[in-house]
Image (cartoon, rainbow over all chains, first blue to last red):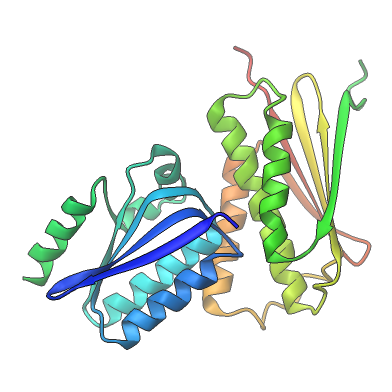
Length: 118
Length: 140
């Protein structure tokens, strides 16, 4: 299956989950497990980078919404990186672009998190 | 040509399991590319079919029907693409076994299908569900 996931962690910075390929009913559970793991380790901020994602369905959206909810329950936040108009369109037509903060570049996302977390 | 006559039909039968939804998407991508669809419209069909198959897979898991099959049938017409998806995933009456996240995803999936194709009908069929989606080729 065309799916890869890599998590980048650095001191005093929110973890970044970089996704590649197809995030769907088959692969989204891996993303869910990774997010749960980071939350259990105490993460309060998270960047999910969809730059190299070619396909994203409602299962993936459900996992992202679940992660955002859990983070906001602990006064945290999650932002997305999504320069691809095709993938961004899925957020737009479902209205989820109003719920998620979506950036075109990872650097912009990290900067926004820096401002929020102080 | 009569309205209901099928100019070309493509049919795919595959296991009702998560790892095969991508196969259905690949197949419908090829089929939709035969139509006078824009790039975005082809993507719409791919996503709508993926969502419909995903819903079938989730119900199959809930109802213990993961050994069942999905039939994806496409009718390529001059002016429209008709996609029929038949599953044998049991009835869709009791969603109490679905978690909050699963229900949210399913609601989003249903919303996406409605937004991405021109017509959609969902009806019970032979131990499962029949979803029919129609996408019209726009005059350009």
